Length: 423
Image (cartoon, rainbow, N blue to C red):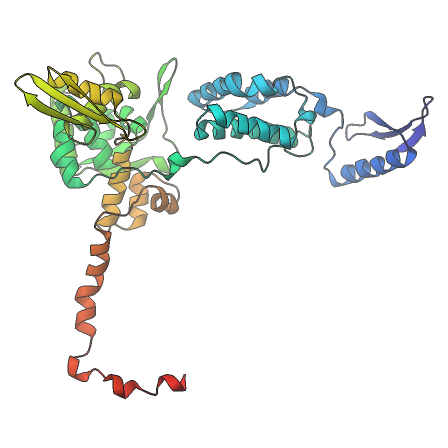
């Protein structure tokens, strides 16, 4: 049992023992305040929710280092977390005692970040701070998480829907615009729904050309130190077998023949010196120029024998143009400066949408996409086709017409008069 005693200085000290048996105390101006506090402490001890009132003196920066050392995550995740801590979180909170971090201070910090950073970056900084403070609550260092309920700036980029290309435009416009040696990886994203990391980590041992299927078992993960091959995908459901459509099977067979009977452990998609493909390089050198050549990003128009006009929109929708003597220079200009355009990942969106639109059951789409929940497939990777109105009407026009009675058997309006009065 705890007790309250008067100190020589005339204050009152509440004394108790913590769960480990250590003697703890806290001083108050009046006996009533000390007794009330002691009652709260004894209640928390009985409920198992006791928090040492002095534990909050630990500096946030010191606790963040402890928290970081206990995490078991991928190398890339740790790399991003350390960078965000060093750049945005610790400069503000590093020297703060955990117990001094309060709701209004966190809200002011988040609002300030929103003036200089993108909403998505602000959200990640906030989530990191909240995660560390939540761990401090679990460690019984603070009573509550002061970051809970903080309002974040709206991320309007989430309002922009992914670009879903039609199969006709993909096969007739985009794929022919991709350099031949890279058509197989673009076909793999659109014809099997693989993520970039799954494409970049695919080996020939996972491709069965005879059975027209591939198996996703590892991914390539990019870090500042290089590309790491992770021997498992994003989730347990990510390990999956995907059938190969004709255009993808043909592209993989052509690539396999060009590789001249490659070792099964060899990556299917590599750069010219055999290293794994780096996403940023592929986007800059292959993907964006291919969109331009396909007419899906900006525009390049031949205006003379050796003259090409490049036209592109910026972030604000303002159109810019420049003249070049070669088509290659014009394409490179648009690829580097144009805003918007399809992402490589949008091919995965398109793959799922094509399957659902063609009536493939959602549980099968979920399986080939590697999702643990069917709701993820429905909510994130399927989108309304442009001809949705015609499809809805088509569902009724054929069947409904055959079910309606002949015109002569339809009751006249006079026959229906009076029936409404009975309702």
